Length: 332
Ligand code: DGY
Image 1: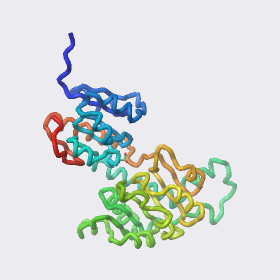
Image 2: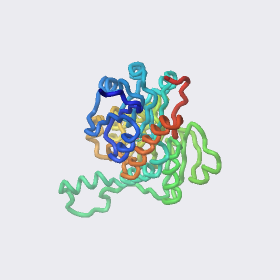
Image 3: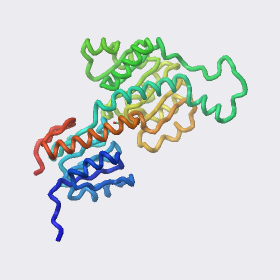
Image 4: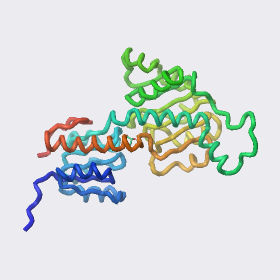
């Protein structure tokens, strides 16, 4: 006769590092998805029946409907710093703890933001495609001229930990003038550490030579860069988005790139990804990467570990390391 397990029951919704999965399996009754199948919203709900916790990536939505359909669920641990895939008010109201994975990816993501900025401003992808296509017949004085990074004005929209990491790289490493706009101004000491000056959004748009978006996605930041904002930017400017799709109006951006309203863009995130707006695929002056800003093995491992540690803390000690909410009631 089999007896039901007294261990908390956990769903791991995507493939993760085997050693992190093994840790979870040593404590919990785990259903995993090491085959990395993409589950529909309904299938996720089905798999969550009877589960006490779930380890998600930024790709799985924890909606009010899902919470209602999974009354046993008590914690959702996201293996991502962004948690716009969580309906946080619904989680809070229904007594479900949410956690994210901040800090462990800050420097890796800032490295990538800077790399994407450089690749974009210096036209690396476009020139590489030209070379691979066998089109390079001779050197010429204006071939693939881009714009300088050093000494230029770096604009940052969203000055959280990753924004500050990019600012430090620009200021200390490349002698850039750094300006930023954020909901909340940093204190003087933090501004000095990254050599950044607070400006309003209009100034950020009109003065930046290179504008990097690192703002979290919310209803407020939806299409925060659209046709009107692109029209305010310099025609020589570079735009980089490593935050979330939906912050930029991709159709308006493709138009601005094609018409030369701005010089170039580097995008790691897309509205509706993994679908990419077809107009972006046909403009040459954009560097496109598949949401890999935090993708080094060390960092992805640390993100998975932090998500797992949040589950372990929650069920073993009754607290979590990196909460995104304070549930108003306990589910049981
Ligand atoms: C994050 O952590 O939010 C990254 O975008 C990976 O999803």
